[in-house]
Length: 436
Image (cartoon, rainbow, N blue to C red; front, side):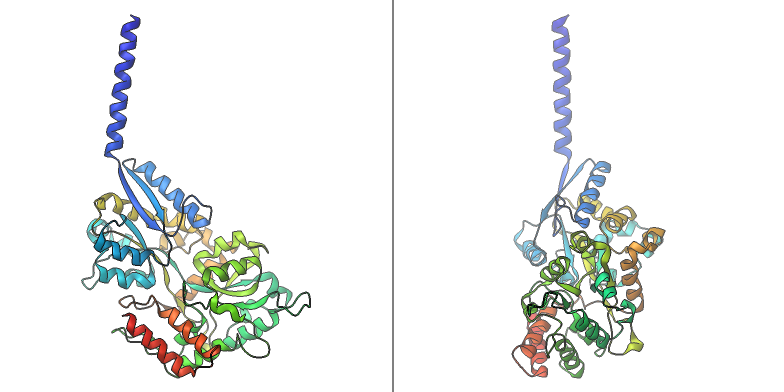
């Protein structure tokens, strides 16, 4: 009898091993490149981790493996990998690299993979149509879907503005911003060094975001880049923008440090969180993450709409940027990869990006939740309202990877080296044309 029981247990153990081995063999591993690392604790990384866990629970035949990448080189690395092989199944693409994606042929046909199966109501739920149009090829095929839209904004310290008697709603023009920044630039201990600067700006030519200069240009130049990818900002509108930027760094009382020309967006965001700036140019995508790190208390952070030269046009243009995702055209795991991409932009996915990750919802059904009308989410309302008033997306059919960097080089040439502003802008246009 004992021998029979041992034999029975052995048979069960073998059967279980075969079953588990068969399941493991049937499981598909999907590799994804993103700048986020789901083992870390920023709001978006927590959201991504939960998203992967929820998806895998509902799809036990798929394992999602994240290989974090440097956001600045990830798209180019993916385009090159399309030719040489070795690409992941899924990749994230930012706005300035959507044109490169369409030209490379590396993005799969997402219409065939899942979009054609959506209802008209499902498609209409994405209210920022420019984000979808930007990722369509010449035949109207969607090659990437938006995950969350971002924009460059002005972070500000509620506590510092209140202490200085400045109403944030009064900052409507560039003159207003300059005056506020002058008041907020202080040497607290009288040692001759500025402790808090009024305005922080990332002016490095690398790892760039849309800066103040572009927002100044948008008010007077239309288009900045035409449909044939020809730049057109070496003109009076461009000079006005260069001179408008210079006023923050020059004069008897500069309100932005001169070493801003070596600061990228990461530098300025970290410095703002540490308390170095009262107002700073930064990304709306990183607002809640910066709140969590703010030495002065995240509840003291807010977002200002962009000012304008003409108060009647306020608020200024809000650019549409952010991150899209796609499946590699040559992926051996297209179906499984497409399932996860579709989940990331589902109502459940967008709800996670928004509630946990702190991103502005890109689906009407999610945005309609009363949660997003609460005072703690006022920064989302500012972004949403500004997009509704005046939005701009860089022409994705062009190679715009160097666009902001070229303008920052023009600003450096004008402000630091004394180059004629029109000449500096002409050089920027030349560099842009050479990049096409």
